[in-house]
Length: 401
Image 1 (cartoon, helix red, strand yellow):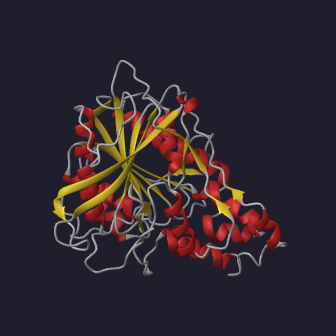
Image 2 (spheres, helix red, strand yellow):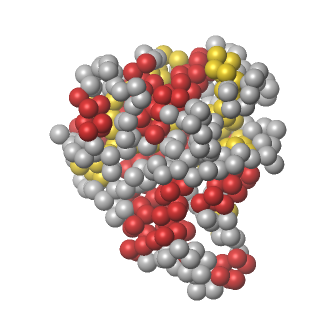
């Protein structure tokens, strides 16, 4: 197994969040457990909530190379290399294995870098069945591309991704090379690097998203963009709708979503999950297509960059915030960290230092409901009321003026 060395940075990343988790647990993770030997004797399988949609979910990974962008880190003759995963409504899934939250090698590196290397955790299984046939109906599937945060991975919002897929979307998650944990088909495990020349700015993430949009167009036209031409699930070719494509992202990925949307009219609707909106070069143009922000710590009231971005939105726009939400609240953390806290014997206060005071159960329901409502409204043109104003079903959600 080949890995790229990890060098820490001071920006808000998934690794720093996990480090904060260790600090909340008095910086002695296994020592905080009453009986560490007992914890080790039965490795704990973490669990993700099941999606609520009517369709089972399928998934397949793609190995992609953008030959328009040379890779100066990998050396001459190399080009920007990405892993992506397509999630989609499936049929006949019983005979197909479920996909892990992260590939084993990537998960091992991820936990080790975060200081959880000695913790006997088994990553959760997803709801996605690897290689299952695509459920075809009379119309092609709307598409959403997903961009992860700094030093994170493409599975970090699996709850949200598989929820969309279970309701009839094709969702393509992107692993941004040099700022992620991922595994390639030949066994290489990539981890984040801290290099001044590494393509890890939001604009670089945005370029990845735009390249992946082109790969979606290839799939829609019946062509396989995987560089190894690995077999695709039955029905995937020709099943995606390039006329109904949206994008979403968390943290740096939220900023990248905005950057990509400003540059590419193929993205019909964009959703940022607490993106800081720090763009280089600075934002200059206006955006006339629908954009929604789910804010937590990066708010218009506290961050000039977020406020400036909001002022450039000329089309449909919405900014909501769940009271008590932390930066990591709109993602799998709300489902996974309570399980880790129980294993480590954390108090409720220690857990809240990591994931905020928003009730974890409600946080999961929020991230299942609101992105779906947004893309239903703007990619499917479905009528719904959830985005019209406060809902008694989600009392923590505030609509920001």
